[in-house]
Length: 73
View (cartoon, rainbow, N blue to C red):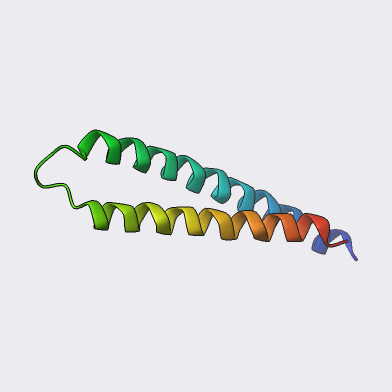
């Protein structure tokens, strides 16, 4: 593999890690906000749970991608 390809792969991997960490942070923040708002009368529990589930699914897919990429030599 040439140097240009290796640099592109490393950049993609670095970007994927940043996106993964960002989604983890966003999911944590969403969960904290959900816990704060759960006692409000306008709180839509199912909608909030769906948002959180979607964020966790995205995070898990990114984690799986990163792990497969790192383990695939």
